Length: 105
Image 1: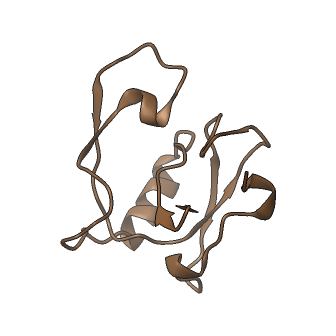
Image 2 (image 1 turned 90 degrees about the horizontal axis):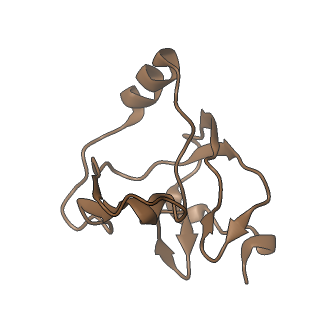
């Protein structure tokens, strides 16, 4: 999600069903050079309450827009709890997505 003008990791999803994972996987394309995220991040980048200090390896893909279901818990620049996947939004470009006003602080 764009935060402060940059595409940022703002959380993680709940576990996807096999069917949804396959459907979503068909929409994903490998990242081109210059992807804004690193290949590894700390566990606390995804779960700030984690006691695990290890790293998480990311599979970088070209950004797409997906609709999510999230509760209102927003801490700093990320969702406090895992978000639910709703659907892919192919009619939207990632550059068109804005952080909702109630999350801008």
